[in-house]
Length: 282
Ligand SMILES: Nc1ncnc2c1ncn2[C@@H]1O[C@H](COP(=O)(O)OP(=O)(O)OP(=O)(O)O)[C@@H](O)[C@H]1O
Ligand SMILES: O=P(O)(O)OC[C@H]1O[C@H](OP(=O)(O)OP(=O)(O)O)[C@H](O)[C@@H]1O
Ligand SMILES: [Mg+2]
Image 1 (cartoon, protein in one colour):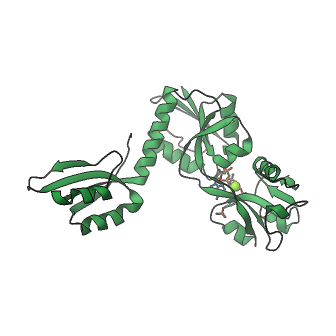
Image 2 (cartoon, protein in one colour; image 1 turned 45 degrees about the vertical axis):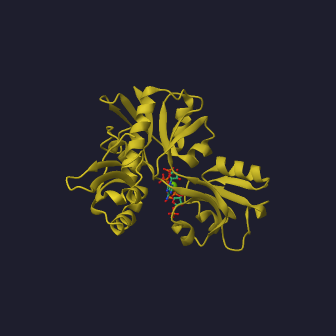
Image 3 (spheres, rainbow, N blue to C red; image 1 turned 90 degrees about the vertical axis):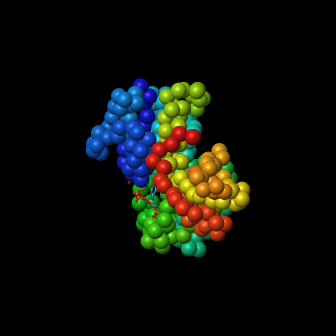
């Protein structure tokens, strides 16, 4: 049985389970379930706090896990990122009241409140900044109003929490994060079940970001059309019953589909259709 850690709460929990479900794995029916066995796929899912997942995986008790890149780095656990999952995106940044400092170089002697002490302590040490770090579990933005710290370091997604607290970001982002699959450092990368799991998730990532495009065009316009829709390997081109016309089929990035359809139409392509991809293996 492959043993996989999945976030049980927080921002990553719902999207992680949704992605696993889309990849054909059995997921829990209610949030109180802590372990789910998927006998068909020979996988056991453990629903754990996202902050703890890298630690479990590093211990070797679980094969792989889904967590945030920031949580992985913060834990200092001996685990590594093997696939980025394109959800749970955020940046990790310093913020202060306007006028407190013009950059992290001014933080010397100040106190920084954060839930991510590992990342902050390392960042300060790397920059040679001598500041104190105070750990808070959440609602870190309020620490400044209450005088516990002059600076915070926290996850920023939309920036709403900072604005509401009258704070502004300062300096460059410390890191950008998203959900990732992690495994123990030095684990063999030819584990067949892990490879299959990663292929399934990659299939979901591709199915979410590409559409299939079909169209007809005159043979003399084929090279121009194919330049617009190169596909992943190469487009499929089939003859039409009408002489001088061909049918083309290629995967295109979903975000660009409308622009590509306009451009194809301009060069004379017709019957241009896009369809969703439900699943794929590249
Ligand atoms: N708006 C957000 N707030 C917090 N974390 C976010 C957000 N968007 C993405 N994330 C990511 O989610 C992970 C944090 O998840 P975690 O469950 O620890 O905190 P949370 O989502 O704030 O939940 P909680 O309600 O328990 O505080 C990190 O990887 C973080 O980058
Ligand atoms: O930039 P935003 O879109 O506002 O999102 C970021 C905020 O969301 C999270 O807090 P959460 O609501 O999880 O509360 P917490 O601080 O108690 O964890 C995070 O700690 C920030 O405060
Ligand atoms: Mg939170």
